[in-house]
Structure formats: C-alpha cells, structure tokens
Image 1 (cartoon, rainbow, N blue to C red):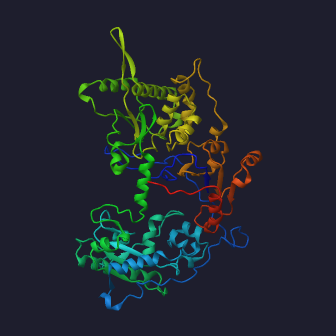
Image 2 (cartoon, one colour):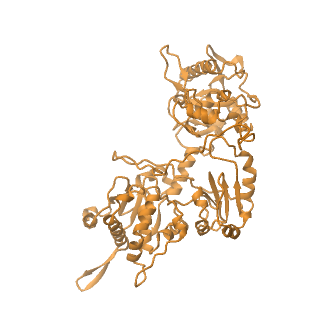
Image 3 (cartoon, rainbow, N blue to C red):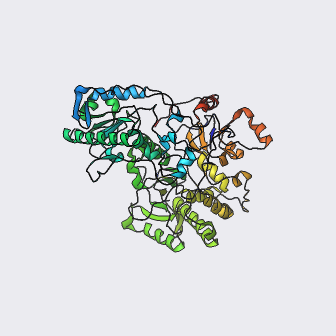
Amino acid sequence: MAAAVARPLDIPSRSPTPAHPQLTLNTSTRGTPIAVPNKHIPYSSPGPIPKYGPTSPLTPEYSPPGDVGSRFASPLSPADSDSLISKSPPVYAISAASLAEAVEQLATQPLPDPSAVFPWLHGLHADNQIQLSFFLARKKALRKAPKCLRSLTIVKVGGNLSVSKLKGAILAEELLLPTDANNLPSLQDADPRFGFSVRNFQIQACKLATISDLVVYGDDSTPREDVEALARSLSHAQQTWKQRLDPDDSGHFSTFAVTDAFSVFEQSHPELVAINSKGKSTGKVMDFFVQERIEMCTLSKASEIAPNVWLGPTPNARSLCPAMFDPKENRYDICIEACDFAKMPDEKALEQIEDALKEPHLAGHEINMEFPSSGSVAVPAFVDVETGKILLMCKWIHKMANGSKRTAGDSEKLQKGHKILIHCADGYTETSLLALAYFMYAEGLSAYDAWLRLHCEKDRNFFAYPTDKSILESVEASLVQASPKAPKGGAIVVRPAAMERMDGSLPSRILPYMYLGNLLHAQNPKMLQELGITHVLSVGEAIKWPEEETKKWGKENLLYIDKVQDNGIDPLTHEFGRCLEFIGEDFVFYPIKL
C-alpha cells in the first residue's frame, strides 16, 4: 500500500528527497557497528498468497497471463559475419557509432506489458518453493525467459567503474561465476534459492543479460586482447546457459567487442558517457546512484534549528558532496554524534567538556561527544534517571549555544555561545531523538508541535522511531516546563489526538507539493491538514475517515485505487492515467533545481 498526498505550492521550492530513509553514508572509522536506518520498523507482509481461479477477485484481470508479443528487431542482430573476431565461441567487432545506434534504438522501444516479464524478473529458482508458490500458482511455464523482451548489456573490462563508464555499464563479476573444473566460464543463476521477496532488484542485471546482446569495452589503457578475451568468456557462458535452460528459444543473441578507444565515445558520442576518463560525472547520463547521492546531500545539508544549534551530517560525510558545503560556514565548536552504542552524558561528563573548551591549546578545535541515536533506547529501560539526563543535556546545549553571563569583579561579562552540530552519518536518521528533545526544550513546544514545526518551519526532514515517540512523550512535560520560553507559572501540555495516531514518522516530502506516506499517515487527517495537505491518493488501502471528516475534505479530493496490492503481482500501469489526472488537476509541475 502507498499513499501519496499533495499540497499546494505555498512552501519554498527544494530538491526532491527520497521517500524512505534508506541510504546511510558510512563514515565511521572507529570499527564499531554503524547505525542502521529503519532498524526498528516491523516486517510488513506482502499480503496473502493470491488464489487464481474463477472465484478469485483478481481473476481474470489480475491473473498473470502467458508471454505475449515477440522480440523487436535490433541493429545488432543478425550480426555481420564480416565482423567476426572469433568463431568458437562467436564474438563480433563493433564500433562506437554502431553501439550508439543500438542504444538509441533500444531506448525508443515501448516497454512490454508487465505481465510478460513478471514474475520472471522477480526470481524463480526451481528449488525455492515459497517464491514459486506465491508467484506461479503451479504455472511452471512462467519460469521461462519472456519472448517479448530483447535487452542490451554493456560490460566493462578491468573491474573499475569509477572511471570511463558508459551508460548502464556493469562489471563481468555481476554476470560470471568463477571458472569451473574445466576452466570454462558460466553465468550466475541469479534466482534466489532461499527466502521470499517481491523485489530482488539486485538480480535483474544478471537476469536481463541472459536475454541480451552483450557488448564488452575497456578504457584507453585496456589491451585489446583483454576485451576480446572477456567477450569470448561471456559468449561461451551465454550459449551454455541457453542450451541448459531454454534450448527451444528461437531468439538469438550475439556478443561483441568494441574496437574503438574510449576516447572516441568521449569525442563523438558524449551522450553515452556517464563518467569520463578522468573519473568525473558528465551529467549527460541519468545515473540513479549519483542522483540519490545528490538528493541525500541536499536532504542532509546542515541547517540551524535553534540559535547556534545545527542539525546535519557527520563532518567527514561532507566530502562526499563538497559542493553542498561551505567550509567557512561549517565550522563547529562542539559536535554531538548520535550513535547506537553511546550512553547519555551525566553532569560530570558535561562539566569535563566545559573545562576542555576553556583550555587555550584547544581553541579553534572541535570538541566531539556522543549521545544515543534515535531508536537505540529501549522504552522499558527508560527510567526517571534517563529522563533527567535528557533534560540535563538539553539545558547544557542551550547554555553552551547561547552563552552565559559571568561575573568578573563588580561587572558582568557575557560569554559568547558556542556553535553546536548534532550529527550522524546520513544527516537525519539517527539524530531525531536529541534534535526533537532540544527543539521542544528551546521553544517550549509539545512533542506534536515540535514534530510539525521542525519540519514545516525549519524545513528539516527527519525520521523518528515509535520508541522515540514514547520517550519524548514521557519527558514532554519536564522539557516544556523547564523551557526558557515557558510562561510564568508553568506551561500546560495538551496532547492532541493526532499525536496518538502517529508512529513517530511524518510522510516524506518528495516534491515541493507532494508527500509520500503510509496508511497510518493517510488515516490521520488532522496531521495532514497541519502539513498543508489538501488531496489524498491512496493505492490499495481504503481511507477510513469519519463521514464528517470526509465531507469537510470533499470526496473529490480523495482518490482510492482498489484491487491493487503491493505484492509484485497486481499491475498499476493501467491506473497511471487516473492517478496522474488526479494529481495534475490542481497542481502545476515545476522543474526541480539541484
């Protein structure tokens, strides 16, 4: 199930951010385990095993049909016999211009119907009974490679894709097993033998290679004989694979060795070059790994959440995206790292850090300390002593950040505040517990208001676990009442019903006007309103709101896509038109500037 929620363009434009905090930039050099994002999210079942037959609500529209269509023609097939380099196994020569033509021709082909390539691409090992029973319902013919699909796999010699990388290129290690006892290469059997998954993205390059023309190239320093040797290995492996698993397939695929130097691609076909010979990204090829890194750097860029208190990535992580960070502006006096195995500092430890800050020989140096990461504190173990330590930490950070008045003789002198960074490797996944606690204390906010204001006003994306929510609710009254912004006579904390329905996370803003969330988010209309959301699109799960709430929003602003589960079987493509029409009805799409 997925819920997409939309809001009007009333917030500053920003780069899109990932829907889920999945990427961690590992910068630790201490040898301790690295915090794992989403480590406390429970396993979510993909749903019941579908029942295909006349009584199933998924039949006939959602039953996976057999293969349809036939493979489209390719300029690489049949291969020109005049360009034959090796007869046994057959390897053909190909120029940079011919490869560019083949890539362009492939890009213009329409995608096949999903039912024609899935569940084959999910991975269907003959011994994996769980996977087979879920996807096939005893239709063994669907284990065969689809006849409608022809792909192109580009393989680089040398084991290094950080330089001289063509569009979509992979390494031979992703396809070939080590040579067998007869010193003959073979393709990997990518289908997982054990376990169950409706994703298995990691196997798809190898799967597609079995129905691909294969092209091998090297950089300018790679000997021609190395390119041809790898091409012969791949040709032999693919022929063996075809004879073993699908001897009746009439499709024919060829293996090629590029005869031109890589510099020819750079000069004459730059649209194919993802990373040039100097190791720099050209920006001419959409590379999802690079794009994800750019978005993660944008997402995690340090920003000030309270006077002199910043939230962002571990300083060493800044080198991964140096353009995102100004070294003159990002110098800190105190760096507080959120990590799984840290203990909450006590009063003595904080006093020692204060003393260190006064040492003349440490002037200009960052003082480093630790605090428990989000999700690392078990709620049953969280007792009054720990509650007091969170309040103590927040008071100390406020004191360090804002300075203090010190008496010197008969006069008072204001001690300058220190610049403080609360950080973790990816910039937001592990810091949420301390960041939210301090924001509650510094601003005198309830947990619910802190959640919303840190996101809406401070423009921070963060990820909090259900355990964080429980802990912050337990210290809520103490933090608010002790806050420097608390009114005289104390503050009364009111916990809205919307907070009770939160799991700790907010939906993720993936475009300036669009959020991606889960069912729990979609079932919390009050929280959605607080975020400025006005439309809700729910896929696979009905939104169950009170009738008066539905009337207030307007039924025309809610769209439910039925009979679609996130199970790897039900197709969504036939619903794209209705979804896009709903999303585009009231919103204008603007290009995102990175």
